[in-house]
Amino acid sequence: MDYKRTSFRLPPQQAEELHERLWKQYDDYYTRRCAESDEEIAQRWNRDFSSLKAYEASIEPNREHFLAMLGGWPWERGDLQAEVIDLGGTDQFTVQRVFITSFDAVRMDFLLLVPRELSGPTPAILAQHGLGGMPDATCGFIDQGEANYHSFGSRLAELGYVVAAPHMMGGASKRNWLQRKAMLMGECLTGAEMFGLSRVVDYLQGLEYVDGERIGLYGLSQGGMTAQLLPALEKRIKVTVICGNFTWRWPKMVIPGEKYVAYICTDEEDKFFAGQLLEFSDADVCSLICPRCVFIESGANDAVLHPQVVEKEWPKLQAIYEQLGIPERVGIEVHPGEHEVWFEGAVEFLRKWL
Image (cartoon, rainbow, N blue to C red):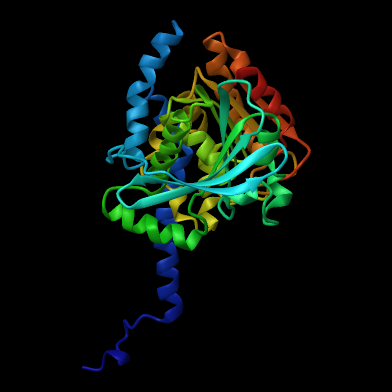
């Protein structure tokens, strides 16, 4: 039989219309589910505001869920096997590139900036670059990203902090490659990276000139995501500065907008975590950091993450700290800049709490 001559042969235009119809039905369904996620999230939390100790105990199950969402930390903390390469320095600080074992055969590197004049055990800060950056960019040692990072790693060292600038995997295509493999093994690239950064904390706590009880984190963009995620898992981070990441999460993920870039419009697959909107808005993630200290930077002209969207989420986080009677431990600065480190308010916050 010649099926090309049948009366029920499907014209190309009608085939496309059927495809579009089915796609739109799925899209409408999942968009609605995401839009309703706040109601779902509220049912997953049972915060106890009667005391700081009670609060911390009440959120511990959610911390466990959060770690599971990121694939868990199934690796043992073996010998760091540190390799230190001296790079020289300035008149104010020395510079080393350090390689440590994160897990298995994964060796991660970071720049270590140490002030030349130390008056005793010194607080340390992790300075985290974004998706297209490098440790050297956060410190101003290469031209890349200077308009965004403003050498904030080096500036922190000049203020007297020991600075570790870790190297995270850059480039969306390379990250997607690794994320797909990780997912097949029930893991998550971001979760593995957070474990690696916790190993940097291990290293810092082993340095005699570092005050191991005073470790902070400051990151921009994807580094800002790190500054939000890592302290939610790693309680040794006492203060965190989240720059260019904290936002009203579900629109940022799935709704294209004029004042921000939605991840669904990008090729960054690693930003999507299974079940995230069932339990974790950005305020909820930061509530896992509480009662430790959180500071948020948002640029008034940030085309990636407009402050109008950020400010929709901010009151939720602020209310948690207020209910606990510690409103001074959380702060936000909406500055006149773009998608960049602003530094001014953040440094004041760090000086106060670290």
